[in-house]
Length: 398
Image (tube, rainbow, N blue to C red; front, side):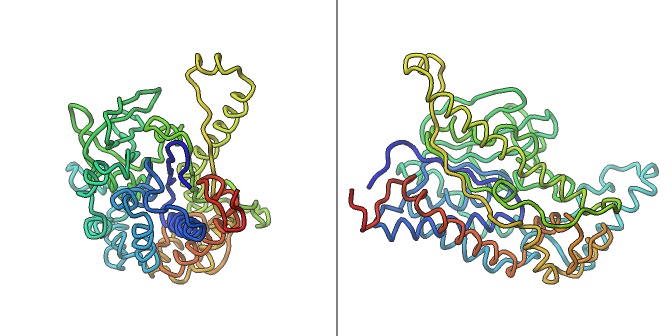
């Protein structure tokens, strides 16, 4: 059964946590196929941020065959290793650490900008992986066929301080501009994905065209005060949001500690604030607007310019920082050394220190566990998923 309206997909940021999204998408395809539904082109509008932008592009480039796209994404995430994302060998880690220590201790002596470290980790391997696995050149083709209407990739402009949505669309959608955020229509390529996934201080910024000039861009989760907005601007009136933590997961069971917070603990909370908090707030805001619109007369609703947006949220039901610590010993020696320096000891839970690890642990044991959790959580919401897509089970022909 075909559904009414334009379905949008929003994939939030979260580093290694984005493997969870692949599990959810995999189960959605299975649910649709079991119902006899058409799963070839599930999402005409796709928007992604940070690691979610990478998943969004991988899905969009094969938007005319969603099951094949999801299968390919699952293969990559199931076999992940840290060295596919950033240089994790001990020599590289020592060299990076030495440059930062030199900056802190003798930075006032460094006169040449090229000698100053720009980021903590070198993600050149990720750039190579994206070129090998994501055929951005297919975007014009799938846009032309109508399987995809628009792809939006979010990034942050370090120069202007604006949150920017780069988008490529089949139709001429007028760029929008709001307070501290704007949109630019362009031909998307791998640089936009690297910019969107450029975790601040951890990965390098990427230089991209910004209208008439060039600017340096980083992780799209920064200053993303309205993460659902781009999908609505690009034409979606029913939206599936796949989160990467905090929105549905249970509260922490860890006992309160009087110890001073470690750097790892502070960094983990900072990343959670960047990646997760804005999405939670925007989901609540959209639901309140939908409830308000139900009480407004149709004529007044039309005059307001607002329209109800059907929303389905799927997010982890378990704490991902706890799950990461279960697989902490799979992290490379250099990463474990970094965590020790920052105040964490892999294999031993220390309050919220596992949060930082949950973003950086690009190892197959952890990503496979995340995929499995995504499958389980989507299966638990099978009724809502069938209703969202208009699929009927054989036992429910009405």
